[in-house]
Length: 308
Image (cartoon, rainbow, N blue to C red):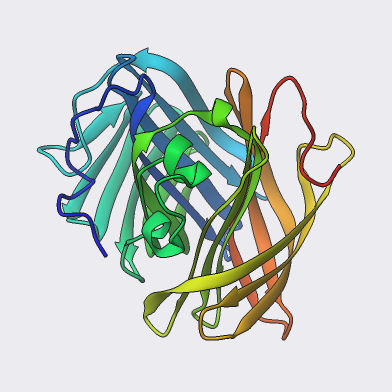
């Protein structure tokens, strides 16, 4: 099931103070050991927007720009010239299939294309959590996700041009974005070399309700997931991942067991909540490698990481 209107376009806010439209992009190119996390959040009722723009290589930052309380923008990814925020422009070239992201300043330049491998799918709908699901109530009514090939160039302050040919996820969300509704959550979005992709997100609300966004991409399509078994092993700080040990069972009965190790991590604050983004190297039980996002979120005052 797909929404009747493209979430790349403007959606009028309801009366929820934290109504949000957001876009998110990541990638990793193992040949260049380079990747990124990009996000734009637009909160119409608060008249604010925010963005992340974090690039890394060899486990260290290349360039980071974080703006959490910018003025509201009425621009959207799929309308006109697209979004322009804090020096970054993101524009849809083909609806829900192809996006061009550029950034051109003295110390850093980006010219990258995200082009769909698997189509974008509303993971909340496929997860069948219902309108009372903790994610649907607090994080988004619609959460479209898809895998992409990412190509182009990055130019760093030394003048070096890094050619990029990697893979990544993108997502589009529409609905409330109330991090205070979640106590903690964890996420794994691997793209494996055999073509398998997984969306596995487990959240716990402040009232103790478990909620999942989950689907599996294989054989050119997304299918539902019946079970997520997630175990994170944290570094001494309790907020960054040392490794992951997960099992995901899809609706066809296939079990995808994997471990993961961290390649890069960066923390993004949301006042009383923090998200720690990791680029992970994933390994299936048969040894197949993959790369992608590992994420964990924590509400403050500190209430544990779910493994405590």
